[in-house]
Length: 376
Image 1 (tube, rainbow, N blue to C red):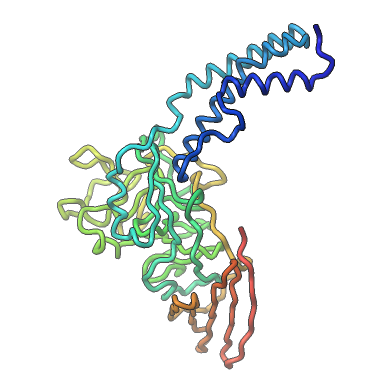
Image 2 (cartoon, one colour; image 1 turned 180 degrees about the vertical axis):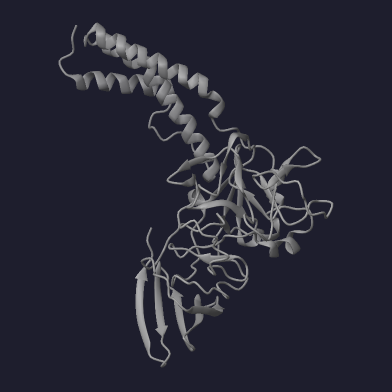
């Protein structure tokens, strides 16, 4: 008997899927934490997908919408089922014991959110380190550093089981946007080249620690954060690339500077593990991504999104940043710079709710106030 309306067929399909999936409401079992929620959500999605692929063709046949449609939907159903089986290895691994990688971030655990799932180390950070920021920059685009919401679902994800790429991706011609690594203090590391393909260090764009803030008011490094070597100890990583391989400082575990690095700026050490090594000359960190990565829009994906306050600024020719002061209790920060012999300041305060209040002081001492609400 042919049903009068397609809507009846859809209703039968949904009922059959719910029965097969074994849950009445579509929200899955109660879970806690981002890792559990992510794993449960993906598993739940597979149940629905497989159920849909199996039951839809038979319901369409039962309701009389034609043998051709039945054959097409049956073929699609079995194709989806085959894909689910074939891709079973891509489903999340269950969360195991604490990964060894996590220990390398532990010196900064008070300012980081550290967790892991079966596939990734999850690092939440503000990318707002406690060392002096911006001082020494002589090519400034008038951006100021803001703490970033790299937490929760917007956290950094470092692969726990990196796989070597068949063809490493060079950073000389690729990845001019976004991070390529994450320092163990939670600050991202970008390509040594800026988005114009210039060495950011030689262009005068970096501060004394090899960093600056980009158009998203996001502080990040472009050279290796070598100051972290003293904090983490000799022979330990100062960062992890977003392909999962560690970035060491200038020396290996034996205290020797390596002289046999490959074009990726790394090597396989005596323990059989691949590691990148930093240098004081280009490429400073990574010459090519030795591990597999997914690239979208000329940046590694996934990675967190920044949260800027003001529209992107323009280069201020002749300006040199001379000081950066903090008042963490009031969430107020003051950046001082010189321009043609005069001293000027930008003071800004983070307000609850995402508003940032700016006070600009010119060479004559006159002030201008502006307020911006940070994007989401």
